[in-house]
Length: 410
Length: 217
Image 1 (cartoon, rainbow over the protein chains, first blue to last red):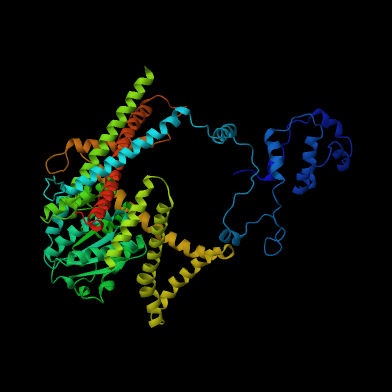
Image 2 (cartoon, each protein chain N blue to C red):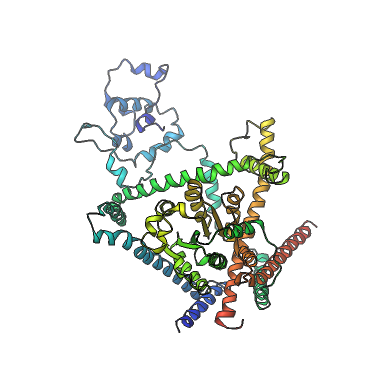
């Protein structure tokens, strides 16, 4: 804890009296005379309003004017002027006391760092040097770099064009009959749905937005198609506001292929509240469904046979696993964006997720397993072409860098 | 007609976003602002239509006595509006405190029970697994070494000026070097997955432009 201002100003009492003080001891104490040695009482001291005793101690130290003032004290001098005096309590138990903590400002006013009187920091030199380096104006771009700029732009444009061409050619040549190797995680996902009997209940959470819809919508279509084939009742909801509209679109497009399925699914829409929302579904699914025909079959989470989470972000997947799967031990599978895959895989490995679909590739694998080719399989060729172009450019870039480095050494 | 209009709007907005490849320009910024504005507007409408009306205002209007307890969230919500003025902002602290308290309690509890315990348990693997124990010896070794190395890399209180030799220092130093490589490989995998996700978006957009808009496919 930092010393108070008064403590900081008050020097320690010397163990032995200095010679100059011994001479003064005989004379009667008169503050005016003693203060004559000081050119003028500093303004910061007057504002401090220190008691007479303390003024005397300070004055005694300053009278000789021979000893050097400590650097930290000099630094303190300028700061102390800025510190206003604490208000004196006028009522209550603390009458007359200054600097008492007040309760109301703690709640109402955001805490602000004031001017703190403290000795100079140990790393002040380094900090000043750092500030000097950071504060330097930017050096003009070297001529060589400036000459290289158009070249960089040309390479960027070349990359964009080749990438776009590869994707367009891939789209034009796309085929749904491609030989796609299957991963165990996708096979487990498929198996989890395949094992559901007719009339079982699946809860499908559409937790994605337009930014990840390109990857997850094909997953949703493939999974919905499979669920409807199996005659599973589906409760749809979303923890993101955009998810409910995307869910409606996906349901409309898939249901049109499955006549007579209209009564067996429902979209509960957006569930607000983040973690609380997920927990609310776990605790209050029955009452939420009670006004609908599906409410007769689902009285609570215990009547749900499988939870399917389609998540565009890591947080949304974790929300389901942490708030619902772990506490209630419900069977759960997940379809995620490729970006989320590294975060989702540990949950699959630990058995918390019984299956995992990853990105567009996961959707394509699922379509192949379900023998119902769709949009995901048709996008595999352009996707592979784009990956090839990116990999080639990374290799070329590294090769160019290596040549440049070797040339520089030579 | 409505679908045709929607397709044209979507196609033009896609092209406006792609125009950023040339440089930052007003068309790109217009598309960006439209996206943010429409997303926010949509979220507000959904919150009113799907949350506030059916779960708060309608029950209160229908039977205020039976649903008197809904006045508490209503009051907390109204207090949040006080945050708009500096002089009354402190009133909203009550609601914010409630939100933070409940959110933090659920998030911390969930993270412990739902993630940490399972993941720690799943890292305690036999380095020579028997039949039926799951995983191969190499898999388990990589997992255990990678976890320990990554933890050692973030162990900042060892070493320094006072400790530059000894078994403990050597083990931590070796662990941190191994951990650094594991972290780099993980970051590489994360980056590759991010690229894959973006490429999927690009493919989706180009397929939309060529198929739905131009009708080439």
